[in-house]
View: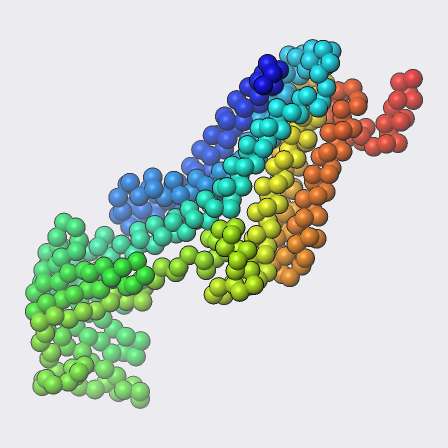
Length: 398
């Protein structure tokens, strides 16, 4: 690699890395507040916070990479322009094509990183994050229980006189449960345990050496005498050695990965597009498959857009290239999101997604080529790039 290429790479990579890290920190701090609220509300361990934040990194990296590349090129080339280094390079015969070569190398690296992140890391980490959220929120039963205090959860009232340190064993248990029809049941037991039935099953409360009394209500709304489910006992009292009961409908079952198209990898989206799982539609899978490609491929056009925007007049302190570049990137993101919604509604992805992509990349290329043939000026004067405006400017200069 030539000394010139290494110099340009150094000028671009430094602000790129700084911008990427700052963007990640800002985005993660915003989400960290919600993560803290979830974990601390469920009285979960603090190490879960770092695990959840790690699962969020791929999602925010995919957002920060295009912005970091754009700002890295803008700030790097702006510094070269303000220090007259670009003028020195061009006077030595270094053209726009030479400036683009090392910058495009950085764009290829960013493109590959974004491709791997968007197609594989982000879908898998999204489901892992959801699984941790599920585990934290469904572990709140042990956190809510306090010795000698009645706790209500989904229509069921619990009270344990003694609770083990890990919250899985209890002594002198009282449970009262009411149903929608007005019936109720009361259970008392000498001891109990909380059994974990696995990721996809409800936790089970196991009670030992106790008594159960229940009352049911007939369809006419008249209460019956206390009865025992299963019968065999008189007086409405059931004595048991062991009784198992789920904790109620408030504990949801963790759905398997793939019920949301954003949790599927790129290969899975392509394989299942004709036979989508669950409630997904073919249009949802097609839209997600194409939008990932569009967003990553568009990264290759950012050097073509950023280098001309960074070349401004040194006689002016204002630097319009930075806000213009960020605004163009945000508008393009909104257009792509709108195109994704159109494809999900049944539109052709070539029109909804790929047409804006080709317009963005083609427009960036035209802007780069026309800027290479004119004297550096104010990047906000985009009208100077139009053919008839350029001819009139040249005539006036002549």
